[in-house]
Image (tube, rainbow, N blue to C red; front, side, top):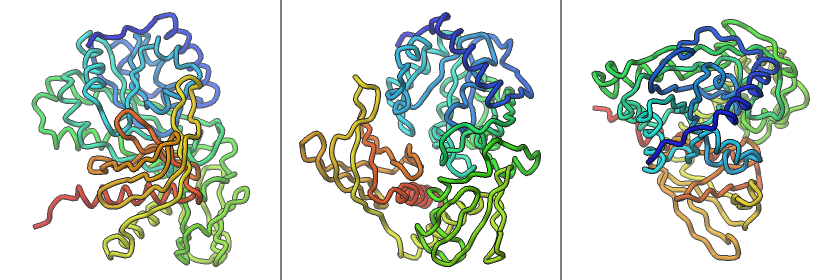
Length: 400
């Protein structure tokens, strides 16, 4: 497959716009930049904290880089034609078709730089999304030098659970992780360990090390869609947010947010969970325990279904049905475009799915994306947590 050379004009305009956004909104500081003058083919692997992470990276070198982006995101962009001329490579998240692999390999074979976000999704709670297992073999297969672009702070500028941008300092550190010769001599496990160490993060613990204030951080409305379970009484979907407060309507447990994004126990009822990431992890571990005990084995909900209208570059309603998750599959049973549908999608190699807390999740089958909107929208996060639990348990190393 031939390399799609980016249009220099379109790329330079995008670099200029992104530089303004990176400077004014993300207040970007570059710690190291080892790709600035790097020549030949290389791969940049970047962590993913926010939807616009690419604006902090695109100007790191004048050489046009081919960015691999979400097919769902790409399909709904009003500037899709412009992005095509920039040489972006859209692919389904957590699934890589042979044609996508060939497009990425073509970039390297042409001696050019390639940018990928291995986690595939920006985080919803400050904790990095698991990296798919195939990533490490893929890096070795590409056979090029690998650089890391590690961003800190963009999660607080653009939290996934809240709309808008909250300006504040962001740092990016770009350095070489492997030479192609080192990659060739390493085992897959060695590649995994070093890659995970470079990319995985807890945004709240990083924030604790060097606290930064972000505009509007005190307002935590929307966080109830991620922290849907009260850690004090265990009630699901009883949390609500009002301004800088998140509380449980069942038992009165309450925490208040500060300008740094941390939470504080205001009433002294129950324990303080200073980090959103710790509260989220508590919800996950509780669900995992219930799965192991047999109390939770699946989840089902009536959903409205949307699909991409490529003429309009947006998702549009196409039907409704019931979405069900069990240990092996997602199933969608209902009506799509006036026709009955009974779709089953294996979750064997799916650590998570594209989603927006309190809004929707996206089930991918072949080249189609089914955006499912549950009637109880806070079920979105429970679907995602349960999928992560099933994936973790299925892929856990065997014990002797």
